Length: 310
Image (tube, rainbow, N blue to C red; front, top):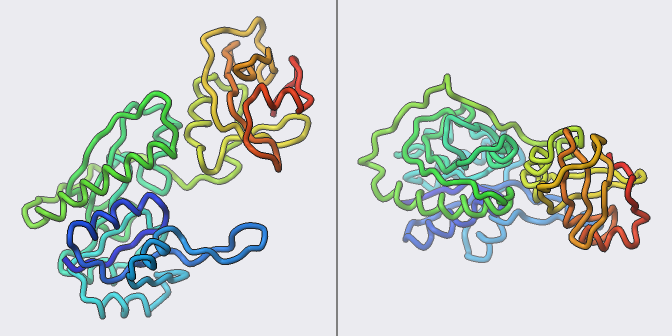
């Protein structure tokens, strides 16, 4: 098939690579514009664009595709059989969606109609779901509401964070995409039950702040869900700490004092949460410093039992 591929981050790469390996002709790659990076704010391409350039694929990066008539003309000139979208990051207009013979399909990392939106993996972990999956559906201008072509469910592993789970789903999605395209003409699309829809809105940096008045299990979900972006964080002595790894403890605090450091051990820092539950901070990153173990941080970070976080 002649394909135009829409995608930007690392999670889109396995699908793009699988299309090329499967013998499809990826005639154009559409992705997000280069963005400032680092202290020097030098423009840096997204990972999909870098991948495309390394393999000699044509790319186009519209600022806002809904207001860019050149995008439609470039795609029309290619004459694709289908458009494949994986984590592109913009709403695509109907004039582009409906252009190819087989229209456009999207690889989405949830079991639709659950978790429509920009952050389905994070919200699945935040809400304590035991399973999620990948859905391939017909794209339309509404948010993740198109008819379903194929899907595959997978369990969420007990200690899995967003980075791990998204990586796993991206490879499962690539394989599912390959199988879907192979039998596209024989698939009967199934409409979504919109009454069962749930939503996964885009996360903001401030969503990562930990509330120690919640149960340790909920704190743990937040840390895992916010890894690697936007990161779960708290404050100690007015300085921001990113919590990178931890887990609920089987022990209970002697008294109900949420946010209080109850003990500092070689294996980490224990913090009291709701109902005397305890959360163990194993790895953290102090403001403007490198990642380190909780105990190592306590040795040089002016940390003592009884200090309060947040």
